[in-house]
Length: 351
Image (cartoon, rainbow, N blue to C red; front, side, top):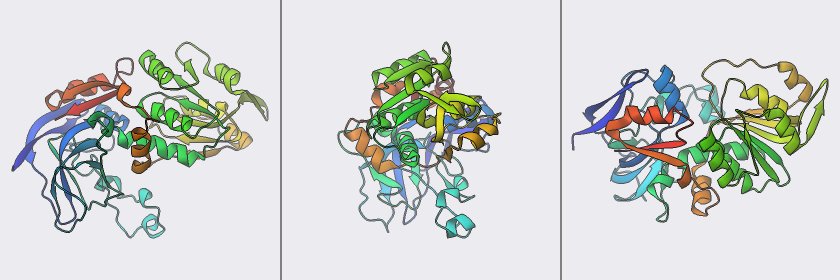
């Protein structure tokens, strides 16, 4: 087992299947044989525009696999376990590392799975310096491979919900019903908040959001989103204007206008949580921020244990959101399908 097949990023719009060395396992590392890996929204930005990666990168960080080798210094990790996780390496010396804000270390992405380190669009993937319970997580027996491959994005949704401070009685708007937006909606319902309204452009994503528990689904392609949000969540007057009355708005779309839209939908002194990654700069009327005084938070993180709990308990369902599965050899077609929101929600690649 000296080499393996992997999808290697060449340039925007192109990956090639190549034979590359199987990662070597150090004393604290775990090597997994990949069962499935999902295509993330950030992967799409990389594939389309070259964001976040350099040519030669093996992408893919939403994975599940079988342990085939564990480092000699690790305990509690056994060959044959199904597991998921993430390599993340920080410098340990910068301001953020010294103050405990490790996710903000400038070196973090350069040392993480699928960005600077080889990812899971390959036959094998390595979790470096694996920490059971933190960066390495066994998969419960009752969870399917497909569900397990969605744990990372569900963890992102859970992180956004927890960062938002959601509580019973809150009225919530979620903009975008891809996997993360849909999972965030379900996680809010598990709190439980009073009401969740989802807006979305794609008919297939709207349908699944409704089937999986959204109280209201707004057709953003054919309705005035703000007026519908005012109807469903209440009218929120503010200085020199009138918006909706959402306690929390999650922008899981990262669309051209969705942050500006969120500032209108949120009530004064409410919370806007940003999860989606725009592909360009957004134009925002910052007067809305001054006059409405919202709490605006960036949500970069993933809470795996809570994601495992919610999926295991059936409170977050992701199996219906997996619309396509492709073999590794068809990686470019898999990305083409994932790029079309009218065709897909979550696309998996199975080496």
